[in-house]
Image (cartoon, rainbow, N blue to C red; front, side, top):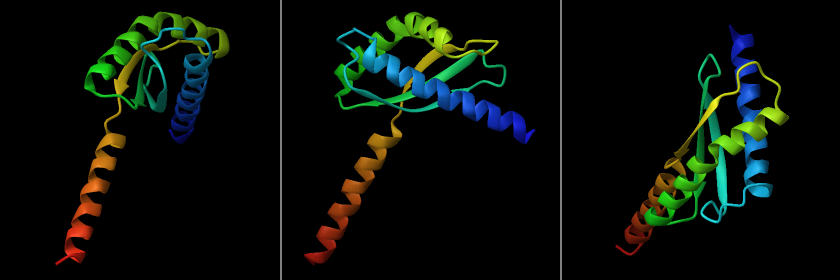
Length: 120
């Protein structure tokens, strides 16, 4: 079983690398701008891949980014198929990764609490 996990992890990492490059160099949709891919989760049968991303954008712009990624998913999947040789090419599902934003907010709250504590 560990061998299957490592194969799945390697494929997920390769998908993440290739998609990041494709989005950066090949995708011409102005809605998608600068995004960072933070991870890829594959289903055990490789039929679906959740692609987690972050973007420096407010909620409205984030919806545009998501719409752009959804519109480009067929193109990205096709190009991914040219770069990665696996039996089943996963359907791509883009998911905004809130953990970075949440971590930043928590960090600011901690900093504010420390600053407030020092002034008392």
